[in-house]
Image (cartoon, rainbow, N blue to C red; front, side, top):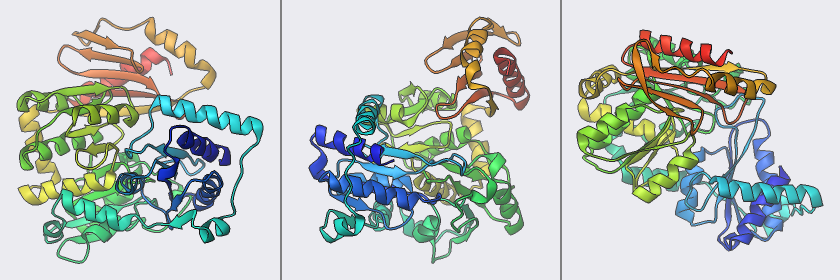
Length: 450
């Protein structure tokens, strides 16, 4: 881990950004604060001023801190939505965005050099604090002030809504309460204590992990449930009936909110795993829609180049213009609540309204573990058996940029791709009925033979 920090420090020095400083944040996982302190000791020993978060901090709060503070970048110790057995090391650029492949490749080279030479100096934290090379910095106040500029938090606090929030034992603990509590809006937080084991669940805000949130929404007769993942850069939403809104539905609803309620205009950016509802909204509002490979490191550059209104991906991560080109589950949740406030509609009614504009769209994803040594066999099996039509509907496009993405003539689609972080094969499908989605998923599994 110290070698990773040394790689970042050497990168910042090499590109002339070391004098701007570095923010270091972390999540609620086991020993994350110790890893963050160790990274701070290495950066300080390299002559880089470090702004160290004094407590677990959401990744989007750290990312915005980079922008507001004008530092050269940030390290975040987090494994995001992954299980408790993992921890991770994220690097954010000076724009607060995910690092590009070129940047991470260079940092990895410098990490390898540090591991080879063993030259990883460190300044004891207490001494670095005394010398001013490390400074504790709470980023929450500046983040809250910025969100108040993006939307009217005071009006939202006055809304007659009952909201259940679920930070999933992660870094988002208390953030919705801090931003929206104290007025008429009623907030009930569950799973709001630190648990490095996440109570045995995976801190990914998808239906399979949100049974408690769904039950609480029903028991409390709440208007909506909002869940953030382990580092709070993703959002999951439960409607007033305890039903999970898919990430694709939420993405399209957020686009509709910005376009119709806020009256904003701009390009829309989506990954190839995301919904064609975005394309339909682009047609309705005469806006360009850009498709990227999976990963916000591909979304962010397009957002910046095109001054895009919103960028999103299937994982539940959405970024917004005027903020920073990075995912923010907290702001996404606030925008969704404001959509409810301004329309007076429940989440299920908002979904019905969306479908009245773009037509019904249903989506599911299946994750299948596989032996890593079978990867190439699976790829060959799929590539040699791609169908010309599915259920009598012609396949009009095959995209192999990231896996095997098949688009049908009626805009339904099937995607088979490998996870970028674990030995898991993901099969995705979207169509106009759940029955057709199930058939597409079964076909995808048959093609992969997993």
